[in-house]
Figure (cartoon, rainbow, N blue to C red):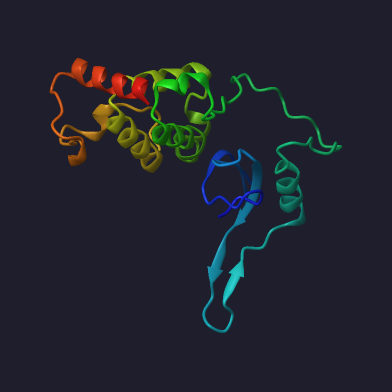
Length: 201
């Protein structure tokens, strides 16, 4: 999928919401920063004669999705009863420009945001902790790792949808990429090298 503003092929999903048979995703272009929304629904292949058939969507589902899909606008007023206020804190939305990501290598930043906003939510929904404190705790753990570990752990989080990111989840057999050369065994030395590379960049 390309950004409608600049045509860049990569975006970060910052919000996913299902409404009936329609799934609305809010995306942010990694190149120009433009936000836009997509509406997705299920299609089924019914053979050569009938081809691809879309899952039927009610008018109400479509209206709700379009209304929610305007990231820069307010939804139209309705006569529906207002939902009861939730006792849960509002979901914290991560962004690649947050200051706490300053110690995270760029490739891992995008993966971290995608893990938090998208894959983690898809797997755990409201059962997971969505506070800023929980986000900062995970970022702090990842920032202590060498760059190559930051990237591997963040991408593994995207694929697995873990509630939290811990290096132990990857097991003991993960080795540094060959192009990095020999790495020190001592974790403090690994962190010092990682910090040096980050400051150098």
